[in-house]
Every structure is written in structure tokens, then in C-alpha cells.
Image 1 (tube, rainbow, N blue to C red):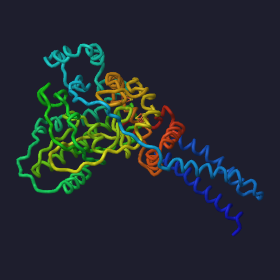
Image 2 (tube, rainbow, N blue to C red; image 1 turned 120 degrees about the vertical axis):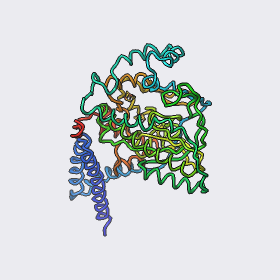
Image 3 (cartoon, rainbow, N blue to C red; image 1 turned 90 degrees about the horizontal axis):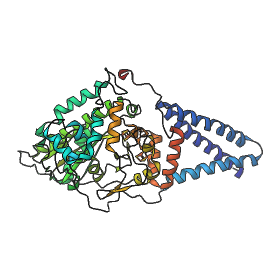
Image 4 (spheres, helix red, strand yellow; image 1 turned 90 degrees about the vertical axis):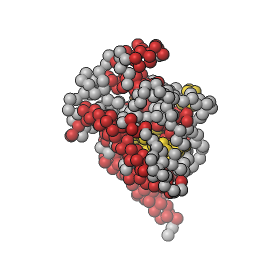
Length: 457
Ligand code: SF4
Ligand code: SF4
């Protein structure tokens, strides 16, 4: 075989490989019912492929050099995407972290405090600066009431029904009865960890991790959760099992329509039930355990999940997992059962969020900070405004979730998106290329032009 024919074979093989990649992108986009990226990819691919084939088939060898240049550029791009270089850093914690009072969380103010009660008066006596902003929010309809932008008498109750069920199951004060009456069954931490993780996944979790329970992640006083308002919280379990359930992208992409709240409520329900099952199992083996589920937390779930190796905290203030991005709902089980811990995972989120800012750009309430990190309670992180975010929820009639929808880490699982997930973990250049591609194909301000599922119209 001559050098010329080898050259021709390599060029045709490269055209086939790049065509495969382009077709995979187009097919994936069509399967996800996203027309814009499919059309853009086809508009780029078809002329490029036609020119490449024309030049490659030309009898004059000199015509093949531009194709060889294109192939080389493509190979270089693949190398840049997948070569591991650069370092990744997690959140910086230069100061000491203080425990947080659950009464400082916004849900406490709107889901527990009732005007006219002693709790209400005591809280606003201590926080007069919050009185006027909270009054304005209280004057708005609740997120599941008529008067909100996306309210629908037949479909809004999907989420409110699920929250009503959770209220009955998850807010049971017996969840605080952590101790077991059984003698602990002898077993080693390795076996315990294996069984707990397996049972968590079997019970409905999509991800599970085990980490230490840092006392700084335990609330100081009871706020929204069941129990005497303002009582000190005690939760001295050394370990935390963190469960996560994926939120369906085909639901989340309609945000801020209230279908996003149907999805989040269902996934709170699902992950909470898995946590209850795991708690019950641990107690039946003679160990102490407490579930931390929607509306009944003694711990702050996102930082506990970071310590358990499930992901990193992103600019939007939520956990970003390597598998599903921020499209997850969490529950925690704290326990004294001997368990092995997972290592925290750092995969470039701090770097990506620094220049991405897509959640902040798309946030309709301006709640997400656009500039650099601040030192907050000993941690360098981005600050979000709970009040701005929650007011928007009350206006739109859902838990909004636009930030979840637009985050480039949120794309649904598929070969193509999973390859990009691998790439953005490997080096800072890949992260920058990935964001430019995301903006180009999906839009800096992505639009949802897809019909709601028939059962939710
Ligand atoms: S849920 Fe909506 S309003 Fe709240 S931070 Fe996210 S995008 Fe902004
Ligand atoms: S949208 Fe961008 S900046 Fe916001 S959390 Fe996701 S990756 Fe970070």
C-alpha cells in the first residue's frame, strides 16, 4: 500500500468518525426532543461533511490537505477535551464554621410561624429587619393558590397532595425516637456499609454516600421542623448516610411551570421513604438512627452530602452531583452504626461555576450572586438571597427551578452528555469549551418550547 492510499484511508476513517459523533449529537438531541441543538448541529455538519467529501475525493492530492487540517484540528480538540491536566479545588474553608439556627431558614418563617402567635412575636422581636420583607411575601398567594402565574385548579394539587402526604408521614415526632430497643447485632463497618448502601439503592435512592456528621452541620435550635419551637437540637450521631434521587429532566425542563414542583415533591417523597426504610433497618439491628426528610431536618443536607462524597456545592447554592448535576433531592440518615466513610469528590465545580454564571443570568429574581465568592460562616462561597427566591416562588406558583434547568451539569444522562461530564472533570480548558458549546447549542438563556405531558396540562 502506498503512502498516498494510507493517507486517503486515514482521511475517510476520520470523516466517518466525526460524522458518527455529529449524528450521535443530532440523534441525542432529537431523542431529548430538543430541536435547536439538532438543527444547529445539522446546519454545521452537512456543509462541512459535503466539503470534506468533495475535497477528499478530488484526484489532485493537494485538495486533500485542507481535509487533513480539519481532521487534525478535530483530533486536537478531542485531546484538549479529554487530557487530564490542571488541578481541581473544592470549597475553601478558611474560617471556623458556626452551627446555624433552623429558625434562620426562610421555610421556618413561612411554614411554621403563624401571625398572632407567641413564636411569631418573639421571632420578629429578635429580627425586626425581616419584618417588612416578610410582610410583603405574606401578602402574596401561597405557591399552590389561585392568583399565582402558573396556577391550575386541576394540576397544581399534584404537588400539594404529595406535600400533604409527606406532612403526615415525615413530620411524625416519633422520628426523633432514635434509639433502638434491640441489642446491636455484631458486624463490621465494611459489611454494614455494604448493606446500608445496597438497601438504600434498593429502597429507591439513585445515589448513596456515607460521611462523617460534622457538628457544624447540625442545627442549633428547632425552627420549622416538628418539636418544641426554639428547643436546642441534639444529634450526636457520628455518621451520616446521604441518599439522593434524580429529578426527571423531562419534568424539570418546564420550569418555572408548577410541573417542576410536582417533580420535586414526588422526589422528596421518594427519597424520604427510602430514608425511613434505611432508618428502620438500622434500628432493627440495634443501633440509633434518625432520618432527616422534607420538613423535618435536624441537619443541613447539602454540606452533609458534600462530606459524604455525593458532589460539590455550586453557585446556585445546591449540591451538584457528577451524575445528575443539581437535579437531585436529598435525605439523610444519621446513625451511630459503625460505617466506613466515602471521600469527598471534587470534580471542577468551583472552577466551572466561577465563569459559568448561567444560573445567575437566568434567575428571574436576581437571587443568585453573579460576582465572586464571599466568606460566609467560615466558608468561601456564593451567596443567594432566600427572600428574593421565595418571593418569586409565591409569584409564579411553583418552586421555580429555572436554575436547576439551565445548569450545564443538569443535562439528562446519555452517552454524549456523559462523555462531556467526563471531559469537564479532566481539565479547565474542557470546562470552558463545554460552556461555550452549551451556550451555543442550548442557548445562554434556554427556552422551553415543548408541550407539557398530557396528564399535566
Ligand atoms: S429557584 Fe428560581 S428564583 Fe430561586 S434561585 Fe433558582 S432561578 Fe432564582
Ligand atoms: S449554572 Fe453554572 S454557575 Fe450555576 S451552578 Fe450550574 S455550573 Fe455553576
